[in-house]
Length: 313
Image 1: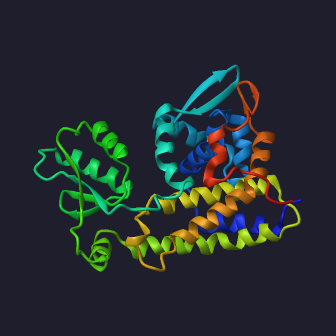
Image 2: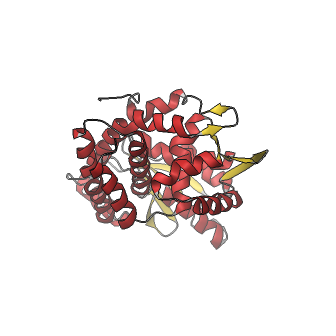
Image 3: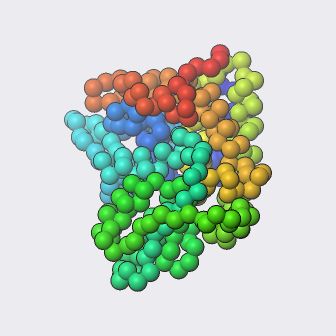
């Protein structure tokens, strides 16, 4: 039996925070379908996302656009269309979602990764494309043409530069503050390079939005699989939006009352609480080329640091 409060919460969330169909479909594919082989029959997918306020026309229009943008690819078998993430779409998803399901680096060794594009003779459009990609990875602008991050993944940075055909025209180096540099001065620099107040506000609004539904599901006598799927999807869709704007700086450089850990803790608990029932709903609704949805990959069961399991009920 569906929980009335949860139904009302889902309806209110979709009404008050409208989501783009294209973006929501990518969230569903990345969070729920990719771990199960990545390919499903479009008709079953349409049934699945009805719980998220998407109708058949919206889904068909969106998957067509996502195919043109090389996020999805289709295969026709008889009268049925089966859609999968493209290899490029899978890479984009993995790139973004490792920042969602896994804890940021806890320890910091005091070094900074610097990307220097000054005097690189890069065309303006290419320099801007690289800057945008690095900003999505959490880099901040220390000065014109110089971006920095205290715990960025070096391989990811080099992949970005190689993809932009700029690896031999951009300097990447490591640096560290000299002994005696005060922590206050580093924190002040961070405040100037990143808009921490805006990021903190996003974390706080995320916590405020999802705390009521977490409390309702904690107290529920039973959990409805379709509702669990809808809540889990909206949770990850919104948490992705928050995390992709969070540079995930070391705690040492952040304000003492930083709300990021609270937001992640809430997301983890709600994801694990809804996980088992959401997976049951996917199995009941989705169909693949071979028939029923196959089991999820082992990596899926390590999201948020613990195996997904039915915690209660």
